Amino acid sequence: TMASTLVDAALAVWKKREVIDGALDVRRTTFTVSRREVTDEQIAEAKALIAREMKPGGEPSTEVVFARGMLLLSESPLEIEIEICAVIIGEIAIVCLPGELFSELAEKIEDASPYAHTFCVELLASAEAGYIGTWEAYAEGGYETRPMPSSQFAPGTGERVVEEAVRLLTQKR
Image (cartoon, rainbow, N blue to C red; front, top):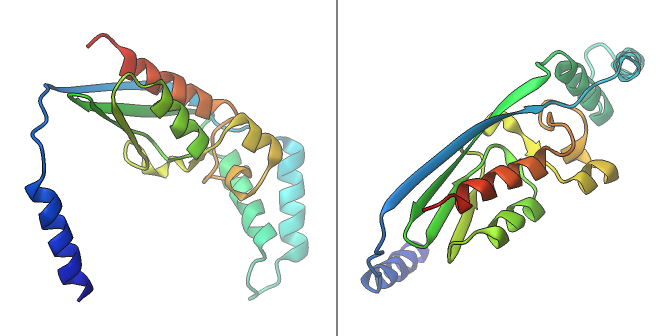
């Protein structure tokens, strides 16, 4: 069966494991970033769209869902605290990140790391953070960067997360 095959493969790898030589080091930082601003014009457009398109008892369209999200975002705090952690064992670094970082940003962290093996693990430090995009992604648009609670961060937050993660990884050992 599939389960037996997986167990056999896991046991084979387990038997070949190597002991990692190195001390455990845990580092963390918190910093404040801005949430996306929602203009009065955007709020008025969202309210008008909802009034125009939402039918009593009907299912909301995708645009209505996004408009509702924008209104929710407009009511949330303008500043957000972010936490990043790094767990380092020998030449292995595990970076715990909030939300869902765009892959290009995670690759920048991994490329700048002084450790032989660096892994970015997302949705750990602050799962409710949502998507964290690149400057380019905000300019291009798309559902991950539309202004709503699942994309609450101002453009530039992703690059700041990279900067802070790399700073943690490059602190003197």
